[in-house]
Every structure is written in C-alpha cells, then in structure tokens.
Amino acid sequence: MAEDRVAVKIITGDNELVTQHLCAQLGLPVSGVLTGSAIQQMDDQALAARVEHVNLFCRVAPAQKNRIILALKRRGHVVGYLGDGINDAPSLHSADVGISVDSAVDVAKAAADMILLESNLNVLHA
Image (cartoon, rainbow, N blue to C red; front, side):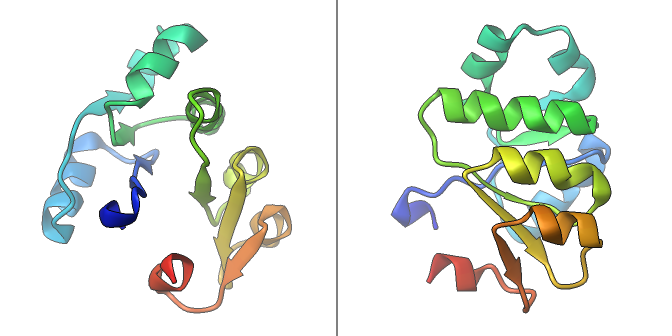
C-alpha cells in the first residue's frame, strides 16, 4: 500500500507497548507514538501538526479518535477508518470512507460506508 501512497495509522484504545509489539509482528514500522493523555493536552493545531509524523495513536478515547481523523482531513488527507464497535460510530461518520466488518455491532455497520465480508484488507486495496 505504501507504493500507492496509502499510509496506515493505527488508532486504538490499547496500550502502546502491546500495539508496538503487534506492529513488529506485522512488519509495520513505527514512525511515532502519541497517547491519549498527550492528545488531551494539545489544541487542534498542534494535533494537526503531529498527525503527519505519527502512525500509532494509543490509549485514545473515542472522542480523541474522531479528533485525529478530523486533523488528518484538515491536513488534506483522504481518510479511511476501520471500526467495529459502538464507540467507533462517530469516527466512521467523520472519515471520508467508513469501513466496518460483517461481525461488527449493528451501530458500526450502520455508520459505515463499506462493510468487509472477508478479513482481508486487500479487497480495499484492489
């Protein structure tokens, strides 16, 4: 996907150490980590500057997920967001393309523009 100028950014409520370990397992390089507590201290302009250089956003609250998406959009990025929980609905709406999975909660599926029927992101890439 990097060859097609698609950047993968992970936005999660999970711990940064666990997330970094998973990225290592997947071979996804980490360019920077930003936690929810740091995001809470930033205004929208500061967050917009940081989202360019960070690809892991960890221990974030649902409202912070939405702020990250909006910051990326303000920077001119087209944002796709993949979510499957009730708390993902606002972010699915805010993204340019909201993506969910067939096993997601009904609220997430209703908020999504696309629903993946297979566990394979190559469908999106194609």
